Length: 477
Picture 1 (cartoon, rainbow, N blue to C red):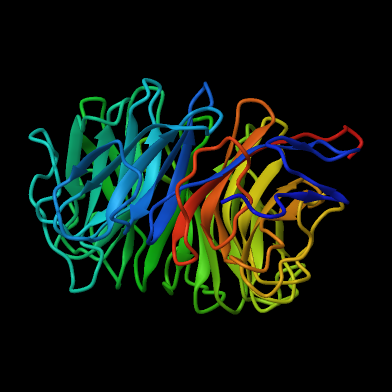
Picture 2: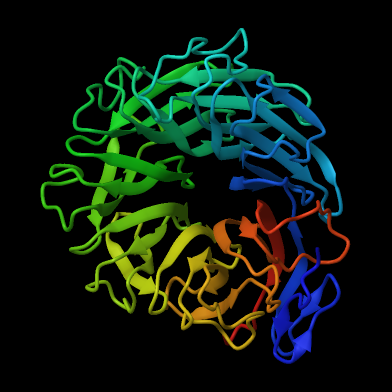
């Protein structure tokens, strides 16, 4: 369904697939929404050099649009999906489902240069479709109602084959929350575990599990064998929520910690954010910094600039953070290459706001997305939609990380009363030029553009969306 009012820019109502705001440089290339009749939740996005968007997530829909399937279970349960869209989002190149008899959630992805894509997450399915060459062919366990084992899957470039799939875990619960590939063909995964017997290697930076939960890092070589794995964090509970690799090959991770001793013994609040940097082997900790205020703070996403600054974002409930105005605000931290804090500030309004995804574009500007229920969340004059109303809505933004200046900020949504729903922003990818690919989940009305692939929608369904924008601004801004 096309929203009654698609995207609004000033007094102009758009009824076509490309929108230009007069006097500014914000162009909507496409906005697409697809899915089945139940809940379909996107978790990761990758974009290739020709503009194909790969949407990765989890589906509970029996009628999720699939061209092929690696789904063993006939009964309805959560399953992983990978959907490749045409460059103009007019059709599906392929869409595949992966699962066994149990719950499978995909939470991270990394695209290879050859068009194959790594997908990772967690599964409780003992018969998950692992391959004969798997690092770990047997399900190790998990707690009742827990995540089960982590998994890694390599999906072929046409979606029809699984060249490699493995479990990864111990007798507790674990999941992968971040993935990144290297130019030499290695794949790094990061996540969290409650397993005392997680398969760390003998040369691990940290071989012992302590506390209630720990982060982990693991590296798989070009031949798809695990060459390194380590715990990260001790005491209390710690989760790695995101990872990136800088220009030197160093590993950068961000997350949250309630440990009294890691990364240091001076907790700021009940739960703090943290950023850590390890060398390219994962065997040396170069930097670990606790961040936040006296209340609860979490870092959910992380990126690096061409000069190896680290930018992490999430949310804060600490009034001491500069710019804090609501109950929960988005939170952005900029760290120098040596780990010192350059900027630490909140963004939001009087309600609940979270930053869920970030990327740094070719102009070194910071792209942000997340969601907000604040009617006074800051938007710019060229926003497609200025007011978020009472329901949660996704926001898309571009910000100068050096000055903190908000260059562009808009809500997504529709003014139609019927079909009004909730939108959440989950992540963003910077394209090769000025393009930005924002993705998230939507229920109810959504401003899809003409000519894009669409499936029948209902107000009860929650579906993935992708919005491709071109964002550029005059130098003086």
